Length: 158
Image 1 (cartoon, rainbow, N blue to C red):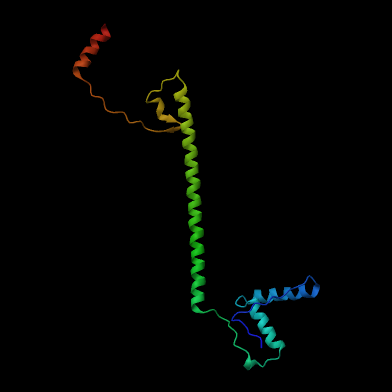
Image 2 (image 1 turned 180 degrees about the horizontal axis):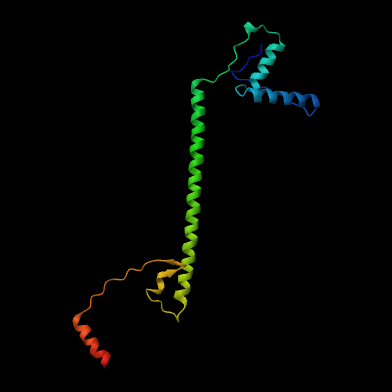
């Protein structure tokens, strides 16, 4: 006698003939209407009916997934949603960083041109405006020595 393993997989081949294509279309239509059923379930039901097995002897169809399977499916959907939102935020942050890096590289290029121009010695007030953006330059407070201020008057006269 033939020994069956716990799980046996058999294949069904649909040929490119009109009858097989029509049957396959019917199967797909049926399975779309009943998403809880699989092709395997449909084949088993058809075999029970075609072999004329009385309904009381047929096993009860599994119509609903177990609560654990439902929870697993819900968790998988939630994880997929979280991943999608996370990657979207990461992508937006990356684009913003790339934009800032581009701006900084342009500013560095402009500063390099200014530094390389030997005929131009920039003062602190001239370095405040780079790329049409104003950046305040902090200058340390200068204390005026009274002796130097008196001497400077004599130097100006001299």
